[in-house]
Length: 514
Ligand code: PLP
Image 1: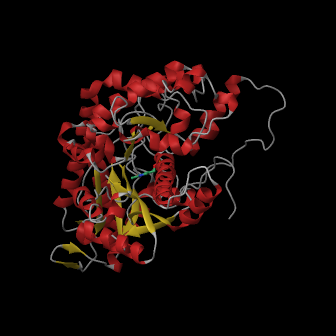
Image 2 (image 1 turned 180 degrees about the vertical axis):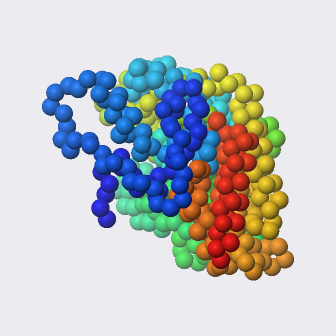
Image 3 (image 1 turned 60 degrees about the horizontal axis):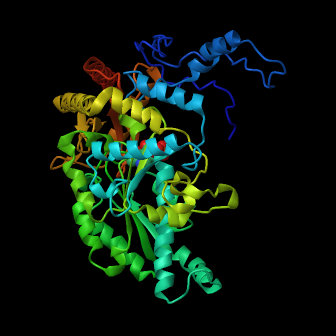
């Protein structure tokens, strides 16, 4: 396929969002006209293909940002952005990012910049406490838990899969009586590794399958269905585990999701953990909770009953503050019950990285908790945001946006003549489809309906092509659906109501044409 090399984006997929009322950096966005039909093409970019030989004036560069870059940006901070999941930005987090850039101290070791490491440790404990995570995930816990900032949820998941692989293979090889460090040990380890299987539901983010690929292991998925609200259940998981046993494979990692990407469903933690107790080999599976988006809700006390379940039987947990928790991209946090699982797998120390503090083991070297060596000073922006908002400000943001999600879901329910809610709305997300002319449901349950699929797709595409709001669609259990989520810091009720009016108007227009 030909690649687009510059910032010219096909107008049909470029959402032009309005209005932008932010006082700081978004004021340059202008309200687009939204005529029906194809949008005019953006003039061809005049970016030279060769790099400049001589220095250019800053004024010219700045001007090009306005004329060549901004037209090609999707305005994730607009209150009319209701697609994917939000990517928050707030003023304190921008300042944190700027300080971090100004300091530029790639602190891979404690020694490289003690403040970077120590602030990260303190701030990760703050985040763990803010989310109501059990004591075992704190840096001060007796079990050697702790948190670390990763580049993204995908990095966090791939990293812990490597750690989980190393832990499981080591157990298996030692159980055969081989001695670590010998050739026989290494050979046997390499024999066993390809028999390992990472498991996750078919709704788990694709980063789980990618993590298994990076870890050099297999991946199997657990089926979910609309009748179970797309949640992973114990019964379906047991089927996969038993099949692995039958095939002579060793499950070593399980991802449970708190807020899946498609529909924000929540896997059935308690019953899944009970299944894992059924066989000794299943008890050895590394259990990870991916809460990349919905994890932010845990700052609100009413959600923290969920994390009580993590005190036992959960090895690691990740969430992205940069989605819904007011910190700009990237701020992906990973908590682990036993940091030695990470450091045993990832600590490789050549002479040039040795120093007395690391050798004594009295300091944390986060390079051994993640794949990259050099690390950005991301704790700073989290620190700025948590101090500027306080826990109460963070809770208020979550509660306000959950309230907006409930308003939208109620509006959709109120037009049962046009719409059908497909999965349980939650965490600001509503997933619905347009009813076909002859609605095809059994006892209120949503079933496959190709006519409804076609109409829903048409309405979704028309709405996005007009550029007043930006939403996303997906397919779940064979049903084509629209997803609307409004939760960035600029979200407000009037925008949610306006979005609903646009969806109703477009739906009526399309249905009239039928
Ligand atoms: N997990 C879930 C549940 C997600 O929704 C996403 C992204 O939307 C990810 C993981 C991947 O996040 P990242 O972009 O930080 O890798």
